[in-house]
Length: 367
Image (cartoon, rainbow, N blue to C red):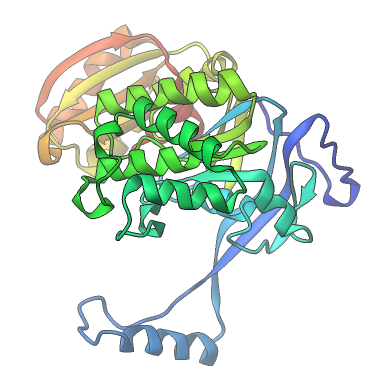
């Protein structure tokens, strides 16, 4: 679906209908000019780049470039996009961790610019790798009691939720362990336990299953579905690189690319954006950029994208969108061979949510 633009001057927030409202949101970062990357000067690198920043006219990178987005009450909105699309920056702006450079945003009816304290009391943020905020001298259970007390939970409430979350996330046997003895995946589960202890109107879930094995990721998704969505009716934004995760948990999905929301809708609506096309999945040895560009120039090819699928990138998957596979397949194979690419296997597939993503951004999600 096309993204509807809303004039910032006409904003009248509607908190009864929308849990999150974002209008024309912008965020810029200064591009630092530093010494060469191989210069081993420690903190002097930072000092040098900072002096250059104030001496020269600063260059800005637009991480968010006019984002418009709304999340309905009780809705879980999936946020998909390649690395650098602006997903995490958007979450940090909504969570008041970054200042807005333009536009307006409202969370639970509160203005992110002018009412940051009210916004913070309305949200819960579960990210990836944020377990550095735990006290590593305390056990998991002690840490969770501490964080629960900060939100005003009674000891009995804290204990009930600790028992529930640790059991559900497979951490029961580690409740008296300190974070330093846990694996990265177990620390991520510990972070999830902290997040799900406290029930707030709005949740921000930034890559909640990153670092987890398939079984662990499946358990976390089930926990989100039954405990967060099913029981509390909380509104949430979920960023993920896993298409199956977005489809399983999200009623609507927004696709971000280069700092903008370029499309949004239900998974079915996004699939329809791919239109009438055939999809050819080719497993190959690494595909040079020149070969990829040549495939995209073949008549009848709508777009093509590649991603690593094998150990250490030794094998890649090339997904080619065609008007007609039968008429295009031979030309694609011949072009790859002309560029020295060894084709291992190929098959025609049905269009998927990933194909809609490729059609919109020209890239695969892993890129």
